[in-house]
Amino acid sequence: MTDQSALYDRHTARGIVVHSGQILLMERWRPGLHYFSIPGGGIEPGETPKQTVAREILEETSIRVKVKQQVLELHDHKALHKIYLCEYMSGEPKLPADAPEAALGPNNRFKPGWVSLDKLSELPFIYWQPLQQPLVDGLANGFSESVKIVSRSASR
Image 1 (cartoon, rainbow, N blue to C red):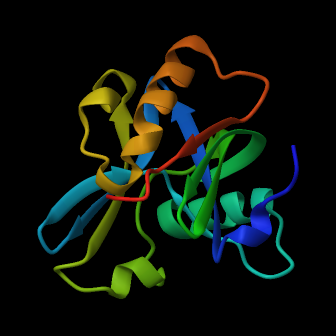
Image 2 (cartoon, rainbow, N blue to C red):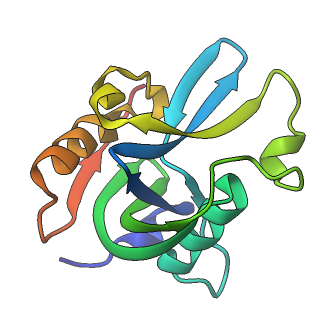
């Protein structure tokens, strides 16, 4: 497979963290929207995707992780999102006061938290919906050795 990363304007890396039968998710409220997402964010210059995952999860959730292998990838118009399995190391989910997400205001809020794995298929994922079923299946049956590629259709 050829590397097509140059086709994308935005690159993110995100982490799947499971601990005690629960998954770490970011709950999000925006005007007219309420949904959940896998924590992570933009890959900074000079940073590897694995470094991004560890940094972003700590910055957004106060959770320390050991990043394992990439299991999913979402191709979405001009964005490429790499999703990694992570091992929970320590911490309790909370949005640090100095996180950029904490300063967005009451109509644009983030809240990290643990969600029971048996509730995962019922949650609103909105933007991240193409990842929901592969995530549910992978957590229930184990992820493949190869990265599963998921694409969003051109229309939302």
